[in-house]
Every structure is written in structure tokens, then in C-alpha cells.
Image 1: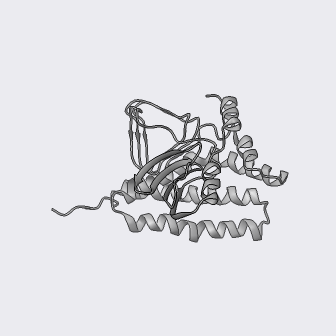
Image 2: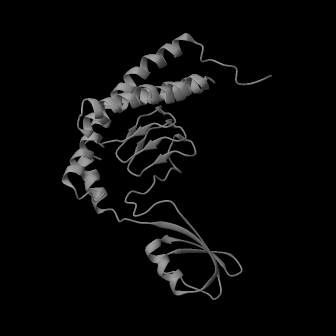
Image 3: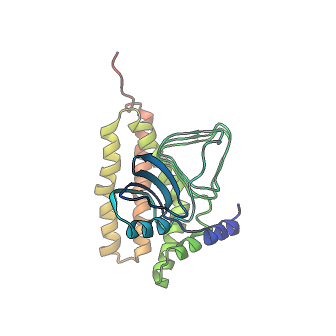
Length: 252
């Protein structure tokens, strides 16, 4: 899909709030527009949109109700992964309209948004975020959020544009700390790199940009991101090349 097709797809998609409801009935009740599965005597499991389920629950009496819900007015459903010729671990979040090549590996915690293309044999590590065409569709995304202030919308668009450009370096640091150092058992240094750089370097830089140089909010955000990542990258590379991050994680 190109940028215009993604914009139109998001704009025209029906916004849904899917729910899964367990009901213990006093009397038999119908749930129009929903999928209903009997579970036991007087018990049903109902799958449907909240706008269809809520009126039925309010209009009838039940012995007990349990409701499960994980999103609200969601426009883009999750990808149906059953026939994808790839390895996809639990906890990966993948939207519809994503292309995943054969033998790709998607690790737990990866977030892959609409428009992203994962090549054949590619590995997406834990915590990786692929925005697809976020840079190109940032304004339609902001409009979908109902931001009324023109200043806030413009500021948000600028921050998104910066993050899209800066994301590769930030993700490289994330892979070095989480995917290499922490995976090798080097948890103390990993914590120092994560927390120490933020508190001892990022926070003072942020304070100086705001209260010493009196820079605009956008420059404060961008400057703090840049300062943290530029310092963290050589420290991560130095630790990785030292080989001291390798620890024995099993006992024979």
C-alpha cells in the first residue's frame, strides 16, 4: 500500500470496540449482531462490538457478568497470523496490511504497524517498532486523534518527524543494551547505561535546554534525545567490544 491508500484505509475503516463477555443468565437473552457460544447451563460467551453488547446488558438482568476488552474505537484490526509463513512469537503486535516475508522471525514485544514490509528471512528483535509510513501519514494520524489546537498538532507533527528520522540510532542503542548486553547477563551495566545516562546526563541536559538556554519545547525534546543517544552509543559499543558482558547463565 502507498501512503494515500493507507490514509484512505484508516479514514474509512469502521471504528470498533471489540469485547468478550461471559454472562450467567436469569432468563434466555438474545445478542443481535454478536457471536454467541453456550458454555454451560445459563452461561454464554459473547463476542461482539461494545455498541451492540452494551444495550443488551443494560436492558436485561443477569446473575453475573465478566467483560474483557483491550481497545477502544480501534480502526485497524490485528493481522491474521495463522497462514503467515514465518515465525511469530507471543506478544508481538502486528496490524493488518503488513507484509511479512517467508521465514522471517518476529520476536516477542515487536510492534509492526500498518504499511510495514518485513523481508524474507528478516529478524525483528524484541521491542523493535516499525512504523511503515508514519513519517508520510503523520498528519492524518494526528487528525484521527481529534487534536483541536493547531499549535499542538504542528508540534506533534514535528516531534513525530524528528523521531522517525532519529529512530534508527535509538533502536540501535536498544538492541545493544537489551539484545546483546542484557542477553549476555550483563544486567548491572545495562541498568547503568539505561538509568544512569538518563538521570546523570539526559535530565541535566533537558534542564539546561529549558532553564538556561530557554529553548522552545521542540528543541528541548530533540536535544535531550540526541544527547542521550550520542553518549550511550559509544559506551554500549565499548562494553560490547570488551567482551566483559558475556556471563555464564547456566549451571551444569
